[in-house]
Length: 110
Image 1: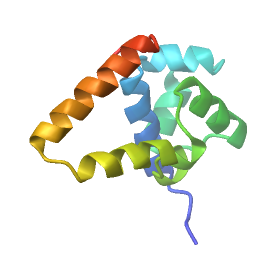
Image 2: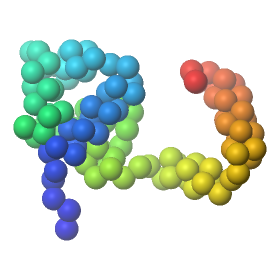
Image 3: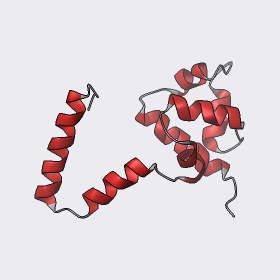
């Protein structure tokens, strides 16, 4: 049985917030918090957030609640990482090039 680890959840929220180039103030604003202090407490592991807020955070940061709660990556990410793990430097270089072309064609900023 896994237990709710407020600190680990907070660390993952902070990591994904930074990856999304959002400040604490910006994310707190999206969550309708009066100020960023509540988000600081969540990221520091001082307090837990409600299930509703956790779901909202996952949608805003485009990450699964499984990842925020347990560090479990989505199957798509896992599949991509598994493909990359079995490659050498040259193969990996080609894979990155191909993924960038696909991302550009899908209008995903890389």
